[in-house]
Image (tube, rainbow, N blue to C red; front, side, top):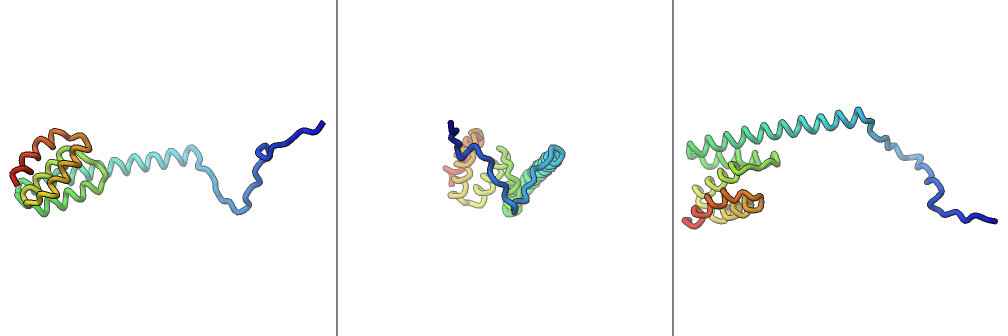
Length: 125
């Protein structure tokens, strides 16, 4: 009696040029801690940028406020205050197309209260 062997039953020969070494549990914990710290730092910067943009909006310095809004967006965090500030800046700069885009993005991220606040401003331009 002869047993038939399947080609998938044989071990795969090792690649002598492979240098892959999986991370140990300790190394994975260090990576996770580093990512958590980085995320916390981005969140802190986001809050600072949004606060700074609000200050410039109160001072009616629209270009400075827009600069801090762009920095806040680069952190990949979003909030209703960010979209509202951005909409107010574009409204005061009379940029109807960009204000429309802000409303559309706010709607996509489910910030409907911001949509309700900015839509009358869009209609008044």
